[in-house]
Image (cartoon, rainbow, N blue to C red; front, side, top):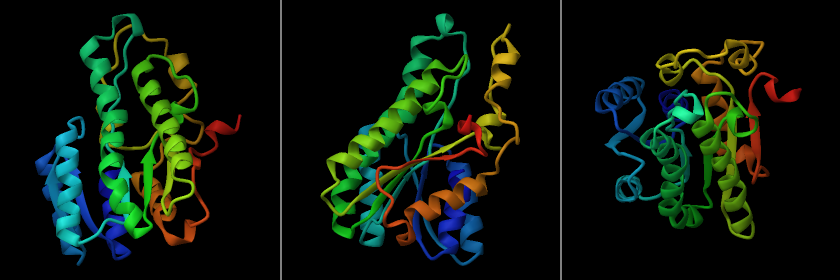
Length: 233
């Protein structure tokens, strides 16, 4: 989803600093965009560490002279029987999905206020509904939804927009690499896979690009479901 968003925004003329813990993935994304004539710089960053988030934001400002959009896309999921989930796994999911976006928001907001910029958080339909075996993921994405709303209210009188999109199941590496524990009730999981199937990363990139654009200047504090109707009923 992050790669698709980089490709989409670069095609629209954005200058991008892409961050990730996967150096090979960053290099591949950068090469794809440069071959298409786009401008991108890559930066290794572990979003669970506040110092590295600060360094990434400063790198963007130093490289491009300004910051207009922060897109918080990094995420992980862990399926587990809740009584058996380890403390380490719980802490990791919350750190990547919630603490990381908060750290990046903290560091980015002063720069975004200068440019009248905006933040797009990628939450999930799991932040709006209960899903079996994903207590940490639901908690982290629900927290990200509320972080979005809280920041939107805090800066409602300032030149900053803060919004979130909530994808349903998307055909990403995250979803392809899920390690399911034994003895799951697959009927419970089937309730939140969606009738229309998986979306593509480019579908979410389109939503992010719109919310980040000047065309969405009236959208602030919104939590937008991009889920093929999952939350409709």
